[in-house]
Amino acid sequence: MIESNPLSRKGRPGFDGAAISIKGAKKSFGQFEALKGLDLEVKQGEFFALLGPNGAGKTTLISLLAGLARPDSGALSVLGFDVGRDYRQSRRAVGVVPQELVFDPFFTVRETLRLQSGYFGIRPDTKWIDELLENLQLRDKADSNMRALSGGMKRRVLVAQALVHRPSVLILDEPTAGVDVELRQTLWKFIRRLNEEGMTILLTTHYLEEAQTLCNRVAMMKAGQVIALDTTQNLLAHHSRPSLTLSVGQGKTLPDGLMQRASLLPAGRFRLGLENFAEVEQILAACRTAGLEIKELEVGQADLEEVFVRIMKDTPR
Amino acid sequence: MRGFTTLFGKEVLRFWKVSFQTLLAPLVSTLLYMLVFAQVLDNHAEVYPGVSYREFLIPGLAMMAMLQNSFSNTSSSLIQSKLTGNIVFILLPPLSPFEIFAAYVLAAMVRGFAVGGCVWLASLIFFPHLPAHPLELVVFALLGNALSAVLGLLAGIWSEKFDQLAAFQNFIIVPLTFLAGVFYSIHSLPPLWRDISRFNPFLYMIDGFRHGFFGVSDIPPFESFLIVGGCAFALSCLSLSLLSRGWRLRG
Image (spheres, rainbow over the protein chains, first blue to last red):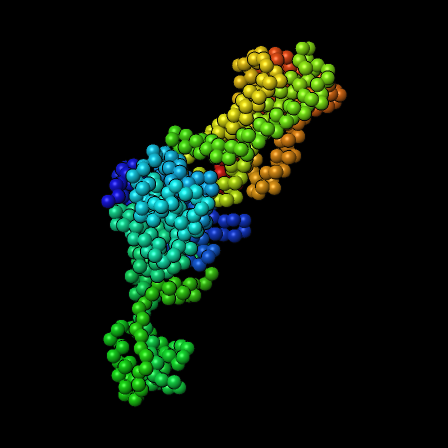
C-alpha cells in the first residue's frame, strides 16, 4: 500500500474543486499562437487524457501548468493554487514526466531520486524510493550512472523523479515513447494503482489504445484549442460505431442494399458500419438470400483512434 | 531551506566528481605560471618596497584562478543543464529564485576557495609568510568569488549555446582578468591606460586582495571594497531579477 503524504495530498484548506483548472490560457511564441484562450478542468481523482496531433499545444499547456513557461494571459491553478502566485504549493502538488528524455549525467539513479526529493524540500524517503525503484523495475540499476541506462530505463527514472515527492497530480507527457511492451504494461499497472489511491493523472500520448483503456475522460486539442471534451465512453458512443468486415469471395459484391453503405477494403473485403450488434444477423441474412457464401467475417469494436481521426478531420484549423 | 541545501550540495558534488578538471587542472596551470614567471623574471625590479616580482605575482595569480573557477562553475553548470534539458529538474520543484541564486553562487564560491586555497598553500614554497591582513584577504576573496560567480550565472542565463558562453568568457572575463593588474602594478602603466584600468572592477578585487597579502596596494583597500561590493550587489540584483522573471529559462 502506498502511504499518502498529508502535505502534498491537499489543496487549499477546505478545497474540493478541480485538480487542474485552466481558464482562458493564451500563449504565443513570436507569431505562433500555441494556445488560443484555452479552458479546461480536470477533476480530482480523474485519469484524464489530453490528445492531439503534434503542435496542438499539449506540451505548451503542460509547461504552463508546471511553471516551465508563463502564460500571456489566463488563469491556471492546481488544487486551487495559482501556478504563478502560489507557485510553491502548486509545484509541490504536481509531478511532471517531461516528454524529452533528459537526465543528469553526473549522478546514479538513486542519487538522482534523492536530489529530486531534496529540491522539493523533503528528506529523501528511502522506503518510498525503494518502492518506486521496485515498481518501475529499476532496482538493479539503482547504483548505475544515468549515462549507462537505456532509453526506456531513463524514461522510467523520469517517472520515478516525478513521483518522488508524492504529488497529488501526475502529468505524463508521452511517457511510453520508446518503452517496450512489457515495461509499458508494468508502468500502467503502477500508475493505475496510484490513480485508484486518489492521484489525479493527466496523460498525453499518441498511443490512443492506452488512453482508451486507462482514461475516464478525454480532451482533444487542435491548433491551441480544445475541440472535444467528454468521457471516453461518450466519445466512443457518439463518434464511433462498431463495424463488420466480411469477404464473400473473389470478384463477388454484396447485395445492392448493403453495397451502398459499404466501404471497399483490400483483398475484396467490405466494411459496414453498424448501429448495433443485432444488425449483424440482418446483414448475414441478406447475404444468404443473395446466395453469397461468407468466406471471412470480423466484428470490430469502436475505438478512440477512429474517433480521434474523425474529430480531427471534421474540425477545421 | 532543504531545497537550497540540496541544490547547493548537488552543485558542489558536480564539480567534486570531476575534480581533476575542476580543481587539479587550474591548480597545475597556476603553479606553472608561478614557476615560469619566477624563473624568468626573478631579477625584475621590486614592485613594492620589499616585495619581489615573484611574490607580487602570487596573490594576483591566486585571485585570477579563483575568479576563473567560480565563473566557470556557475556558467558551465547552467549552460550544460540548459542544453541537455535537465534544467527542468531545477525548474519544476518549488525552489525560489533566491534559493537557485544562492545555491549556484555559493557552490561556485566553494570551488573558487578550494582552488585559491590550494594555490596559496602551494605558493608557500615561493613566499613562506603569513598574509599581512588575513581578514582583508578573506573579505576580498569572498567578494571577488561572489562577483565572478554571479557573472557566471548571468552568462549561463544569457547564453543559449556554448559558443555564446565561450564568447562571454574569452572576450569579457579573460581580458578583464588579465588587464586587472595580475602581472603588473597599474602605476607602471601610461596615464591613459591607468585611467582606463580604473573602470575594470577586477582590478579592485586583485588589488584589495594583494593588500591583504602584503599590506601595500595601488588603490586604498576601502575604496576597492566599496567598488567590488557595489558591483557584486548590483549584479546580484540583476541576476535575481532575471531569475524571478524566468528570462531565457522559463519560456
